[in-house]
Length: 95
DNA sequence: ATCCTGACATTAT
DNA sequence: CATAATGCCAGGA
Image 1 (cartoon, rainbow, N blue to C red):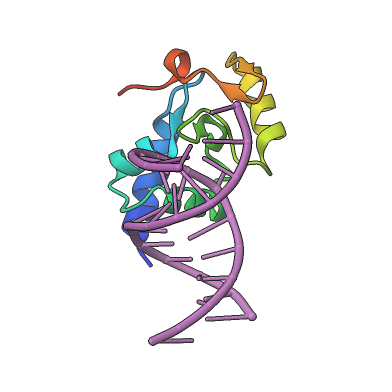
Image 2 (spheres, chains in turn blue, cyan, yellow):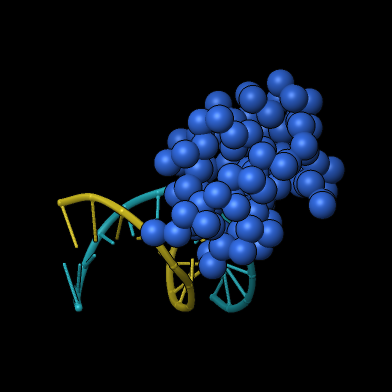
C-alpha cells in the first residue's frame, strides 16, 4: 500500500478550515490520489482524529451511511444543509 | 488470478 | 429529478 499518499491525504483533510468543506475529488487532486475512491477508503480506516465530516461528495451530499451524523457535525460548525445537501457554492473550500 | 464491493466522479439516458 | 453506464483503485473472499 501507499503510506505516502495516506499521509498526504490526512494532511490535506486536516487543512480544511472549520466552517468550510471540500469534495473527495478536491482532496484527491490536491493530495495527488489516483482516484477519489481512495480518499474514502483512507478516511474509513484512519480518520477518527481528522475533520472527515468536512469532506463531501461532488454534489454536496454525504454517503448514505454517514448522512445523518455528518450533517449534524457540519451544522454544529455553521455549515447549513439544505435537506441532505450542502450548498457547495457557499461552503466549498478553495485553497 | 477473478469477482465483488465501496466514505467517488462524470456523462448520458 | 433519478438511474445507468463507465472509469477508477485497493482489499477481501
